Length: 130
Image (tube, rainbow, N blue to C red):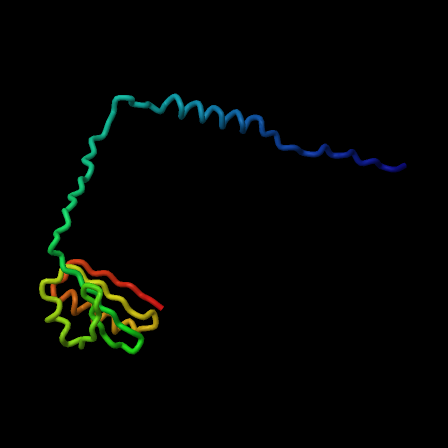
C-alpha cells in the first residue's frame, strides 16, 4: 500500500496587522504634535548699502598677449608698458581689468594681480580671450 503525503499549505504573509500598526503610528504622531499658530521668530534682514558711482573713478585695462607682452588701455587707446613701470601707472586708479590670452601661464597673470593689489586698487576684474 502506498503512502500518500499530505500537501503542505502555501505560507502567505498577512500584511493587514502591519498596515494597521503603521496607521496607528501616523495617527499618534499627528495627535501628539502641537502646532503653534501664534509663534514667530524675529529675523533681522540685512540691508544693502548702494554707493553712488563717482564720476572721478579711473579705470584702466591691462592687456597681456600670448607672448607675455603688456599693454595698458586708457580711454580706448593702448600703449605698450613694462611690468616694472606698472606701479607708477596705477596711482589714483580705482578699477583695473586684466585681459589675457587663454594660453598664458598662470604665473604671468598672478604677477600682474599681485602688483595691482599691492598698488591698492579696490576693484579688479580678469578676462581671457582667444
